[in-house]
Amino acid sequence: MSVALFLLLSILSVGAQEKTQVIAHRGYWKTEGSAQNSLASLQKAAEARVFGSEFDVHLTADNKLVVFHDDEVESIKIQENKYKAIKSVRLTNGEKIPTLKQYLKKGKKLKNVELIFELKSHATPEREDEAARRSVKLVERMGLADRTTYIAFSRYAAEALHRYAPEAEVYYLNGDIAPKELKEMGMAGLDYHYKVIQQHPEWVKEAHELGLKVNVWTVNDPAIMEEMKTLGVDYLTTDHPTEALEVMAE
Ligand code: MG
Image (cartoon, rainbow, N blue to C red; front, side):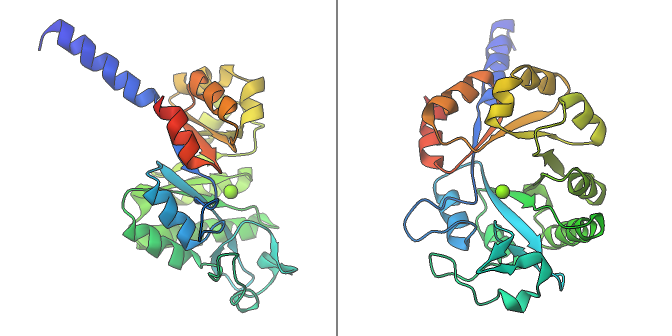
């Protein structure tokens, strides 16, 4: 290969790596027939051709993993109750709250979307450990280990996920740990609120130098999408995935 061609290919491959990938926050839910964390939101995210689709997981008191954002639904605290207490609750699009198994089954059919699995914080380290252990086991049993990335606000939960799935990428969400320490924790990178990155723009370069990646949430303003793209973040999580795809393609 000529030196010129080699240089050209190198430049193109660096360019490709640097493109900011879009992740739909709680699925693509701001569209007809969808709802946050619904099976439809995952399907619509895949149809929108985003890189990944994020969703939230809780462990019920009787050890059922379910996909829902808030701690409670219709005044029922999810983690303190049995699955049967929330089983018939309807999402705004008419679907029932998906179990993790149902959700992953849907994800398995949709081959072109990465699953960005947020394990919610739980009341005690023991419950977080149990939730992490069961989550990893189910993902692996369903053959989705290589398409699943884990994220968590709780440092304990993030470290538990890394312990149970040492090959998987785990990102920490809480914004209070610098890249160097995340690397020592075994994290794949940081997944921080965009305001944290605005305050610490140097963390993007620091992370990349350590071989870590940077994700920012939840960016819905096109001007901030542009700003994050220019900073060179690897992933951008948004409630407006189609708009973000346009900004990133420009
Ligand atoms: Mg989430």
